[in-house]
Image (cartoon, rainbow, N blue to C red; front, side, top):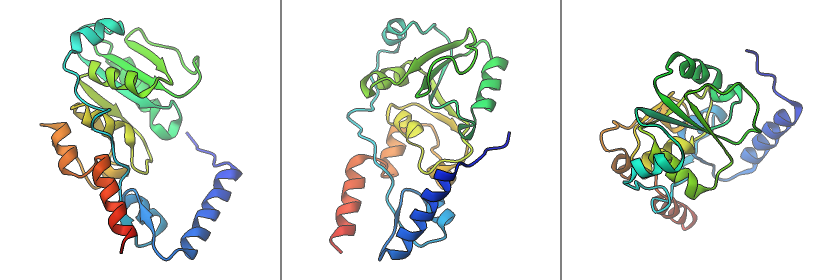
Length: 204
């Protein structure tokens, strides 16, 4: 599939390069972003709030609340846009009817035919999103491009293992998926570490 880049996107990129050229110092959310602009940058990922996205420990009750069947459950959070690799993910969903997929989308309903093994949610708040992460056994994502990729980070903080393409921060860091929440904390991907990094940078 060919991705057509609209004019407003090109204008935004031009403005970004102008801002970079005028800056004394650049900050990027991942090394992949800094590399794409070919500029030296301090790397400060957007931090996750570990008190908001956390393990809840009552998976059976949550599945009953959201009508999620027993068995293996995967979750995807994002968009059905091609850049999110949704075509590939949709093919995997069709090919794996015994696994239930929770899809939490920011799109309008009716963008694709909903398979029987899919539970669809649209534009939920963060408290509901945390509960939906806790219904699942793993997070799946097939994005082609990301800057950081917040959704799988949120899933990690809910102690969910992830299965994602190596883009955004996952181009340079991959969790072992043995203790996902602790691994994300040790990697400094929490909100408090982000704030400390910004304070250190701004007081230099």
